[in-house]
Length: 248
Image 1 (cartoon, rainbow, N blue to C red):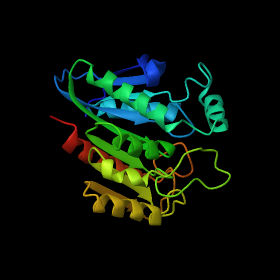
Image 2: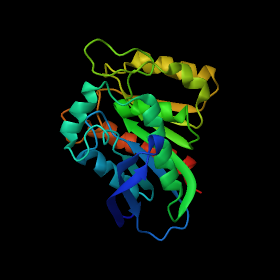
Image 3: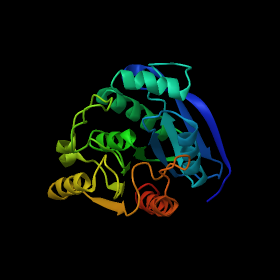
């Protein structure tokens, strides 16, 4: 691990050729072949805490890029305001999300020193989107951190207009790591068990870990839901997983 890195706001080509703001972090280590990670932010948006995660990947030797999925709704707005607009619109349409992730992966593969391998990771709503991307795009590894509504429909009162996508399990293009909390309600352990069963029946490589005493958002260091023991173990599993599938 090296903490030497560069981080900056860039513009990338997303769904439909739209110019989209994104946050890029790249290690300064002289590596000639490194893996890359597309980071999908949580429902609160393109915020400081998720940018810290992008930099964390760079500190561990990966180029990482996080597209601002709400950029079209509120260019230049604060993350909270942009997230409010996105929620009012029912979230990010799946087709547009896929276009933005595909654009992010293409951007990363074109960077100097890239080895061509790209993973994806998402948190909360981004966990569902990471699974969607892995079932729809050619990727090398995917991590779903407590992504809801993959198996069950959105309950009344939750401002998202998305449908279950467990039926896509047979299309998974790469190994999947799932990290969940035993006390989570979205998704529940029963839902993640059902997803694992669908992947097993489809013959798709995956490993799921569920942490006792942890609920939703246990990785979030700035929230009361943070559970250090679960988060630290989860990060180690991420490094081990990406080390197997994204390094040369």
